[in-house]
Length: 295
Ligand code: SF4
Image (tube, rainbow, N blue to C red):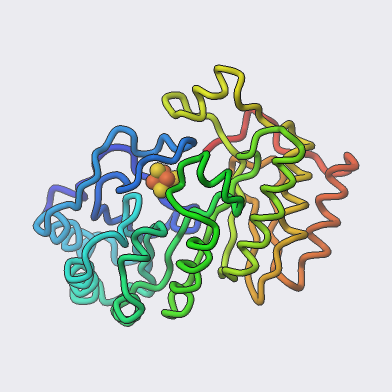
């Protein structure tokens, strides 16, 4: 118990979980095939043993009393079988009663494996936000990047999360279609349509980054994939926001991989966000320099 938290390998969490207790309950991602993702190439997917998870919860109960959010790492903690996941949430409630929000990454497969009742039970037991990678709404592109899902499946799974009363935060990727103008247009429009149908609470737009060791990086090296320039990236961001209609949500592009930080409350703030992008396109706003972009 006194030997600290047991973290293994590359550990990532969404930017909004920066101040959360990070509890690693799985290693890696059960899918681990997306062509742009190099996050967990070093790990084979496993669920950590109960003893290690409990030891970390007990450590947090002693030393992390001021953090009231907890994020379950790694890639898709929702894939954990229901009974074990309920057990983890029970232990969090028992030992960390001050926790107000439990979050985790989820993919379409993990959500599909849970029934509507099971998701509700997880919600009642504290799981309050799920983060899901949508990346694009274009079916051909989803296949190409090996997301393991179709647009319709992403919509259905996103809605299922929302219907269970769990908040949904999704990411989309600018530039993932490459620099063919027609493909880029299809990507932004289809993504806007999927987001509108899904109606998540939060959308985070990232800009594609090339990670050595990933299939996308190899495509780039072979000249089969080209990055957008700053201007083209902004045009994609503009198109995507223009085609996204949320009943009540936030659209962010403030991740460190982006050239222009945007934070728009939709639907109210849509016009202002588009006007801000137009100013940037007209050269009136300074963009984040290339050297400071990061994942
Ligand atoms: S599902 Fe997420 S973590 Fe897993 S390979 Fe794809 S992008 Fe990476």
